[in-house]
Length: 416
Image (cartoon, rainbow, N blue to C red; front, side):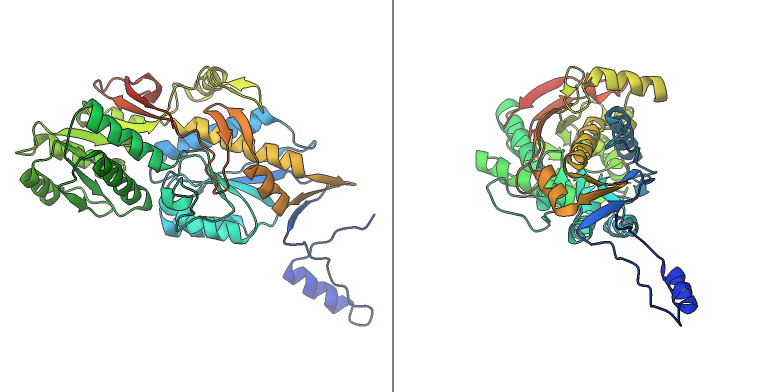
C-alpha cells in the first residue's frame, strides 16, 4: 500500500538539509478535492456559531449539534470530533475570519453554521471556494439562497446550505396574518442594516404592499443603538397601525421598551421575528403583547430518521444535561443539519486500507440530494441550498413567565 505523508514547512526544510547528498524527498501533497484521514484520525466537523452575540442562539445550536453527533455514533468506525464553537460575533468579519481559521485544518470535513446571516454572507464564499460544505441551522436571509422562483440571489454560493427556512416564507406568512387576520393596513418597519433584518423588512414590505397594505415609514438604526427617540418620533408622526422590528436582543429590547411608553404610539401593535424569539427577551416585561413571526417550535413528536430519536427524547437528554429547555427553537434545526452532514459523509467516504478518503465534490452533491425526515419535519434541499420546511408560525406572547418558545400561543400557521 502506498503510504501518505504530510510534512510541515519546517520539517521539510530539515529533511532536505539532511538529504542534500542523496535523493531529494518531496512529501506527497493532499489533493484539494478530497479530505484524507489517517488511521488514528477522527472525522472532524466544526461549528461556526455566535457565542458572544446572540448567545442563546449559539448555545441552542451547539447543543443540537452535540446531541446529534452523539446519537449518530461512529462513522466508518471513527469518532466524530466537533470541537468548541468558533465565535462569529454575528458579524461579517467574524464569519470570514472564523471560516478561514477552520479551513486552516485540511482534515475538516464540513461546518455547522453560521447562526447569523451577516456572518454567513462573508463565510459562505470562503467555504465554497475550498470545495467544502457549510450547513446553517438559523440563517434566514433570502440573499444567501434564492428568490424561491428559480433565481439565485446575490450571496448564493454552491457550498452553502441551511435547514432554517428562507425569510420570503416568513414575509408571506406575516403579511397575510397582519392584513387578513389582524386587518391592519399600515405597518412601519425598522432594521439595523444587517443582511437578515434589512432583507426581511424589504420582503415583508413587498408582500404586504401586494395585498394592499402600506408602509408609511421605514427606518434604519445602527448596531448597538439603544436610544430610539428619533425613530419613534418619526413613526408617531405617520401613525401606523403596527411596527415591524425584526431586531436582535440588544436593540430590540430597547426598541420595545421605549415604543411602549412613547407618546402617540400607545395603541400601536408591535411585531417582531425570530431574532427576538429567545428566552432572554421573552422574560422581559416589554416582550408581553408582541406578535412574533418565526419557525415552528414544538418538535416533540417528530423523529429524525438518521438517528431514530424523537424531539421528546432529545429534549429529555437536554434537560438531563443542562436543565430546562433550549432558549431558541433552532436547536432542532442544528440537530438535523448535523445529521445531514454526517449522513452524507458516511455515504461518500471510501476506505482504502487504514485511511479514509472523503471526496469534497461528492460530499457536496450528497448533501444537495438530501431528502429525509428530521426533527423539524421533511428536510429536502433544493439546488440553491434551501433545505427547510418553509413552515412558519405567528406567536402571540402575553405572559413573560412563559419563556419556552414551544409553549407560546400560536395564532397563525403558514405552510407553503
